[in-house]
Length: 185
Image (tube, rainbow, N blue to C red; front, side):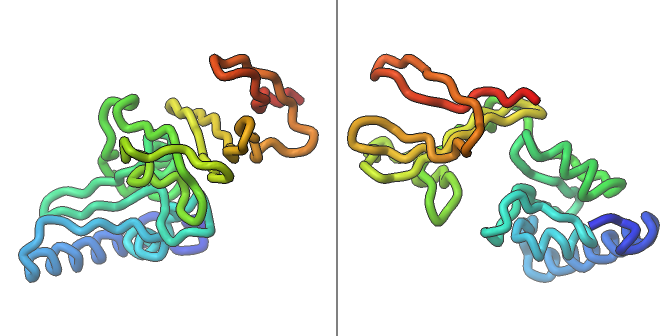
């Protein structure tokens, strides 16, 4: 949503400051250090219209506003942080909550009703099972490569490749598999 539909930049910043003060009074009253707001509706409320959504089929967004007693952060995946600050909370001066980029990249994993859930991927006893979907991605600042694979009896099947999208064969230690290639128009 554009700021023009909500109010002037000054009005938005004033509204955000009022809400943050309410949150800080709540923190003091409850004796807690910080509040994390990541659900899409809560993010929109605290930022006066900001949108932390990438996928609309989940309540959680990709950015979380953390309000502390004396500080505030916008915590996100590296690939989304700068965009959220520039497009969704311009002028609100959040400190981005990520450090060295490579440490915070999650490369995907088991997916289904919950998008690439890291908690399900960090179990050392977990094994790939037939017909389980896996979301795999590589990110660096400003770019993302992603595939959704379905584990089949003989080989993984890339289910995210659409009709007309170029592909190439990739040789691995386990044989050849088809992956998406770069689309050049």
